[in-house]
Length: 377
Image (cartoon, rainbow, N blue to C red):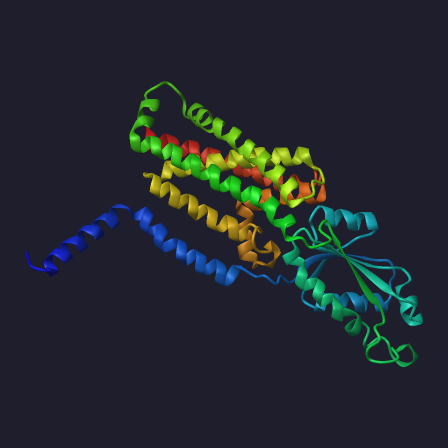
């Protein structure tokens, strides 16, 4: 035998291309995942979010108040989207997560500025995600010098350039010390449940297809929905045990506050577990091998980690990326978990996120049942 034969190399090459054409899904994943990673990291990830939704409560109608609000908005970090009529309404907007910041300009603001009597405005930041608020809070330091520069003239002008006509008082709510683990550890609950439940279900059902045991099950009079419920029910118990274990560790190892909202959290956990299992079942109807099931699960996990707000501020992403992130159930589950543990939200406050999870469960379950019939009949 010769040391090297180009014809034998060509034969191996043809064989590999033939195998590639037979396993299109695997190779599509190998090409698609790097492209998606490049696009997400290049376009979607932004660690310095701007134009964050802000609500204001202005208790006096004056040119100073208008100039101050204009300076806050012109900084680029704040987008005034709501005008509250009372402190209670302002508080509700922050607690429900509809705005990231709440600005209060008091009724005696102009009088105190003119008298140089320690005028203050209050900025409350939703600090459940410290990375989302850090840049905006830093930008507030320049507001007092810029806001009233054109309004304070003559005798009302500051005595020198360094004197600030008013002070910005910042209150970081729900996480005043900016502890990162308060944001990351509750978020890990959603990521861990997704990784384990989606993959376990997808691999478990695909393993039965590879071994031929699924056909034996189908030979029985059991209906598709009954098969699905029977196979997924044990994993629901596994998911609940995982949830309890993670919450206990979060409390006693990381001192994550448990503010309440237990009923809404329980509903959210059940919906998320069922949705994740149904998604794993749907993947198993697409994949033909366990390797394909694992690759598809990874394909789902990548945007779940990057676009859900777990690693990077959700509001810092472009609009098109936020639209994609809204489709992912992890995004809504993270809002439920953080809202319950850090804010003590009621189930009514969690309503939009719970509704999104319920829609996801119904849609994925219907797709899984439809695919189950067409692929295994």
